[in-house]
Length: 466
Image 1 (cartoon, rainbow, N blue to C red):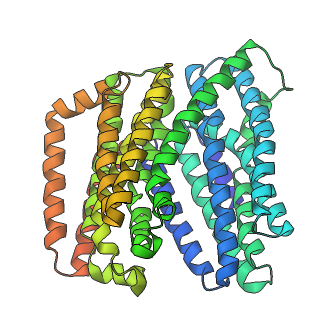
Image 2 (cartoon, rainbow, N blue to C red):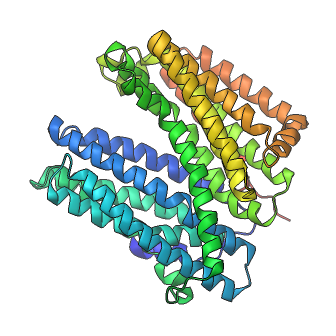
C-alpha cells in the first residue's frame, strides 16, 4: 500500500481537473469508514471503554480541525501564488513546518492532559503520539494543496482512515488493549500523512523569525479564527441539545439525524480545499460561481436523499430507540446544506483575506447560536430543529451579502444553466419521493449521483477525442 501511495505522490498534477471530485469521494468514503469503525467498536468495547474512546476521539478531531485550519492553508495559498519562486516556496514551507511543530506540541499537551481527565496514562501517550504525527502531516497536506495535488490528498485521506480502522479493530478484538488499541489506530493512520515529507524536505531550512514570518502567522491566525466559526456553527445544535437538557426529551434521535445531515459538509470541504489555491491566485467571480454550482449540485442531491430516506433503510441503520429520527432528518438535512454553504463562503473570505470580514463572520455565528438556543429553550427539540434550519439559511444569506462572496452568488443565480440544474434536481427529488421500494429508491439515488458527479466535476466528465 505504501508503494502505491508513493507512486501517486510522484505523479504530476492533472491539467484539466481541480481534483475536487476525487476529494469529495475520498472524504465521503472516509466518513463512512469512520462511522463503520465506531459502529464495530461498540461490539468490542464495554460502554465505559467506548465512552473513553469516543471522548478521546472527539479531542483528536478538534485538534485535527485546528491544525488543518490555519498554517496548511496559508502554505497552500503562498505556494499557489509563487509557483516558480523556489526561494519563496522554501521560506513559507520552512515557516509552516516549524510553526506546525511548535503549535502541535502545545496542542498535544492540551489534548493529552484532557485525556487524563477520563482515560488512562497509556491512552494519553497514544493520543499524544497521534497528535504529534498530525502536526508534521499537516504541513504535507498544505504543500500538496498548494501544488495542486488534490488526487494525492484524496489517496492519503482514504489510506489514512483505512489503516486506522484496520489497526484499531485488530488491536481491540485480538489484544487486551481496549480503548488504547482503538486510539492506537489513530497513530497508525496519522503515520500515513508523513508520506509527503520527502516531497518537500528539500525546501526545509532551519527555523527563522523575521517580519515575513510574523505576517504569515497573523494571516494564519485569521484563517484559523474564521474556520473556528464554521466548526462552532457545525457542532452548535448537537452541543445545545445536551446543554439545554434535551437529551431525555427526544434529543438523542435529533443528534443522530444532525450527524447524518452533515454529509453535505464532505462535498463543501472537498470543493473548498480544491478551489482555495486557485482563488488565492485569481479570485474571479466566475471561479466562485463554479465552486458554488459544484457544491450545490452535490449537496442538494444529498439533501434530497436524506429527506426521502425510506423507513426500511432507517430501521436497518438505527436501533429502535432512534425510531423518531425520520421526523428530524428534513430539518437536519436543510441545516447540513446550509452549513456546507457557510463553509464554502468562508473559503471565499479566507482567500480574500481582507480584514474586518472575520468580525462579521463572528457576529453571524453568534446570531445563529443565539437563535438556536432561544428556539430550543422555548420549544424543546422541535424548536431547536426548526430554529437551527432557519438560522442556518439566514447565515448563508448574511454571508452572501459580503463583497468577497456576493459576486459568485450573483453570477450563479443569473445563469440559465442554474435553472436547468435546478429543474434536474427537482425531477430527482420527485422520483426519490415516489419510489415505493428501497431497491428502486437506491437505484434512483445511485444513478442520479453518477450524473451529478459528472455534471459537477470535470474529472468525471467523459472526454471527447480530438
